[in-house]
Length: 270
Image 1 (tube, one colour):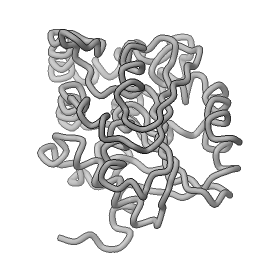
Image 2: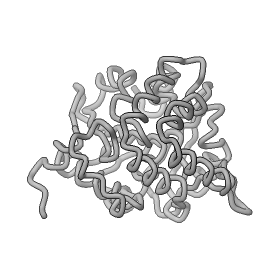
Image 3: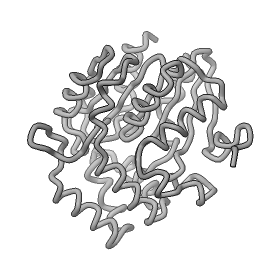
Image 4: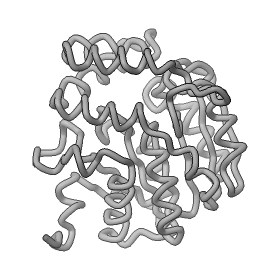
């Protein structure tokens, strides 16, 4: 069935904010929603026309039928959604900022529709989380199996404990925010999405990415080790640079937002 005009944008709570004319898109990662960007949007909105939205798995999306675990068993469907959102809102040559899984979604979308993307900014992004003989993704297969198992066994217990591992534990408010986002997700959605994310291998797409990229990495992130950022910079076909932020954890937009804005200003020239 064809989506009515603005159909997906409305369903995914898409909003346009900001005083600028150049388009920017902010795409959140696993388990959270667009509010993850709230600390940095006031700065970016002075320079850009920004689109924020919630992915179908987010607890903030009203229509629970939007998330089909079969459809979203690969990043391809997310990339198609991203393209639809950009087309519905007439956004071309945008600066795309993707956090975590959304970084790879942006990479895939840029290979399908390069006209929509001027620059990709990838925060805490990984093409593959599981180690292989010649690749350090950060996790052994057994560790991912254990993580998925703990989600299946006691999702809300997992959702209350995992954030303190991935968010700088010195920032209690940010830990609590991620806990609230995770617990607002339906457990069955969270588990199937975790399998999509943690078993994904998108390394082959990097050689097809020609849009200029900036990889932003924190000093210590248990989800995405620095080795992954270096690997991505080496493998991405287009011009790519890497920026480090001196903070711990997977969510610099929460725990080091001023430093992140400074890095973005340096990259984008504002």
